[in-house]
Length: 98
Image (tube, rainbow, N blue to C red):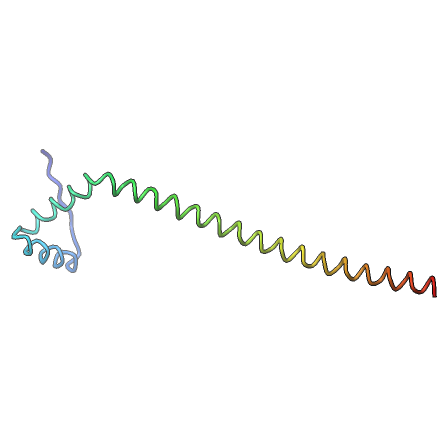
């Protein structure tokens, strides 16, 4: 077996120590068990990957929503322009026949 060591900020070490004490373990024993549990948890990895994929899809949908809103605004502006043209045509037709 290989050995792994790392430095930890005091606040994390304090939390680790408190949790280890709850289970009657030394901090290094608890850290080892916790790390192994996370590494063995393939379901969690799958969920994290799925969450990441969903977050990317939400960002893409948000972008699409913005594009749709821009198109709706553009269509509304074109509609106003067409209405104005129709009014002018009616006015011109009235002037010709009047």
